[in-house]
Amino acid sequence: MNIGGPYGQKHSNRKLRNLAQSHCAVHLYTIVHVENYTGLFHYWSCFATLSVTGARESPVGGGALILLVLLREWFKHVSDPLYSSWFSGLTLGLHEAGHIIFRPFGEWLMLAGGSIVQVAAPIISAILFFRQPDFFAIAVCGGWLSTALFEMAAYMGDAAALELDVVTIGGGEPITPNDWRYLLESVGLLLWDQRLAHALRIVASLVMLASLTFGCWILWKMRKPETVN
Image (cartoon, rainbow, N blue to C red):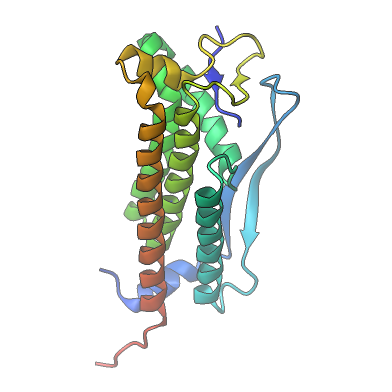
C-alpha cells in the first residue's frame, strides 16, 4: 500500500545569554534526496547546519542571522505558494512518516496522518525546548511550523486541480493522488480547497510573524545590560 505525499520551531538576562552561548550552530533541516520521484529517500546528509561564527562571543549576532533567514523564508513563501523552504526535506520526511504512524487507525486517519505529523513535530519540539528551557529555539520552531503550514496549504490548494507531483513510499501508485482531495471530498469541502488553503497561508504568516517578534524580543533581552543590585 502506497500513500501519496506532497512534492515536494521569565528568565534573567544572564540565563538567556548562557542558553544562547551554549549553541554555536542551529540544525535547520534534514536533506532528503529523491531520485526521479521513485519515493526512495537517500539521506546524504542528516542535518544541514547553519553555523554561526563566533557564536559564543556574539550570540545576539548569531540569533539575528537566524531570524533573517526565517524572514527570508517567509517572503519566499508569500511571493511563491509553491516555494520549497529550507525545512522542506524534513517536512516531507515527517509527512511520509505520519502516514506510516497512523496506518493502523484506518484509511482516513492514515491519509490525514501525514499532515498531522508535519505540523505536530515543530509544536512538540517547541514544547521540549520550553522544558530545557531554550526560548530562542522556540522561536525557530515557530518558523519551522510556519513553513510546514505554508507547504500544507500548497498541497491543500491542489486538491481539486491535481497539478503537483506526488511522492509515494515504495514508488507505486498512491491510494489517492492528493491526501487533501480525499479528506476534503469526504466532508464535502473539495470545492473549498483554494479558500481553505488561502486561510491556512494567513495562519502560517501570523505564526511566522509571531515567531520573529518573539525571537527579536529574546535577543533584545539578551542585549539589555544587567542591573547591579
